[in-house]
Amino acid sequence: MSAADLQAPAFTDDNVAREAMEAVMWPHGPCCPRCGSLERIGKVSGKSARPGLYYCGECKRQFTVTVGTIFERSKVRLSKWWLAVHLMAASKKGMSAHQLHRMLGVTYQTAWFMEYRIREAMRSGDLLPPLGGEGKTVEIDETFIGQKRDVPKRRGYAHKHAVLTLVERGGKARSFHVDGTSAVDLLPIIKANVAAETHVMTDEAGQYTNLRKHFLTHGAVHHSAGEYVRGKAHTNTAEGFYSVFKRGMKGVYLRNCSPR
Image (cartoon, rainbow, N blue to C red; front, side, top):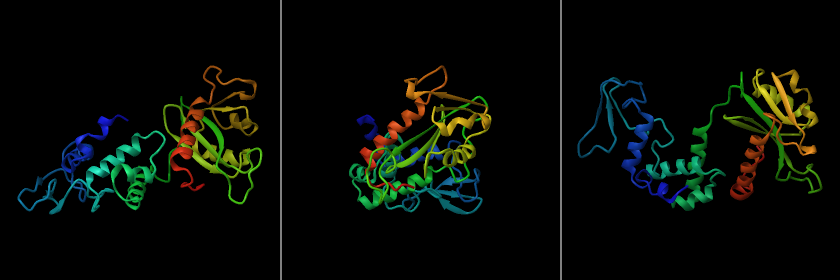
């Protein structure tokens, strides 16, 4: 992220931030957030009218672009909200509330509240469509991170949290905190989140042996034999995802993230 990005007028001027938001929310002109009308909408002018105030002739109510959004009725300046969204979206390893409060000049409690609202707005919903599909490839891998409560640290992975990740090449990724890495733990999650007509790629772990029965094809690379790529068979995308994920967990969020 360059210094010029943080000095953009939308991050320092509330009016410019509002105009930028209007361009994103209303690409075809002002739209009433209450009745959805695009007609008979006028801008309210006058000394007492606040900037960006509109009037809908259909439902006879006033509104601004922030109505119905996470910014509505917030006492935090819109330019700070706009910068917070930019920082969270552009920071590859994530943005902690402590870091946000230092960069925005707001209290930690305010930064935490802003991050919570922004993350909720970014959610895709509870009923997500399956990853992959015809002609698409999903990589599947698991990793271990952190330490379980009341479990003494020891050799191996028994004291760590197991995480399963599904990464669609050129698409989205989903991660799940799982109880273990056996087929019983992983297969139900994989089947529920990956379309049957998908090409799936894994390493040689035994829990993935029967994936060919459930998906179009199953390619596996043998990491234990020093094989990491064989044609289109590899899990490098998932490995890259974990690299960024772990740098964020260890270098940004530290102990402020629960297992769930």
